Image 1 (tube, rainbow, N blue to C red):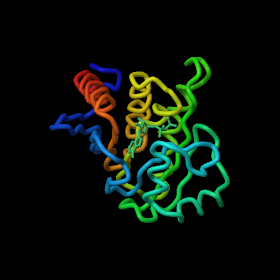
Image 2: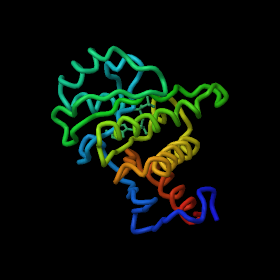
Image 3: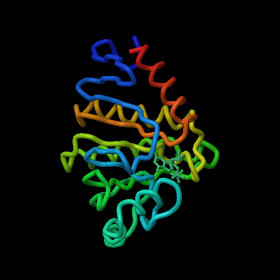
Length: 193
Ligand code: ADP
């Protein structure tokens, strides 16, 4: 029995897992192309755009996203804010701010956990039933990928366990290495449950 308990219904499909009634998928590719109710952006405190996935989302979504971000006026680390999706195929973008990784003892884990958890809280508030996440903080912010996946998956499974929401979560990994890290970690924990 794994740490999430025996009573949990969890079925592994081909690249698809089920936790309670939520489908969990992993995908390798560009998150701006994913058709879900909301994609999550790995934003920074200013919400004014940046490099990496943030830049890609603003470029593909158009200036309405930046206009709404300016009105919001920033976001503390570990929290999330929502805008429309503009020209993106998703309806909304949830801008979550992950921590910059320092030494692993500066609250990074809690802040990363909160970034995922608070994104899902917002999704629930807006009744957005399918949500796609990038690997927050693991690019420019330097969070080690093997550590980050554990925090990301725990936050998502905890939320599903507590709220029985959303219907679908997709982890979108840009690189092949990131994808295989998620693939092996999900395989490992789902085998244990
Ligand atoms: P952070 O500043 O939070 O580290 P980055 O955007 O630098 O954010 O990196 C976060 C992750 O997003 C990295 O794993 C990076 O490879 C990935 N990434 C970059 N562009 C995209 C994209 N278009 N779609 C999905 N993931 C992306």
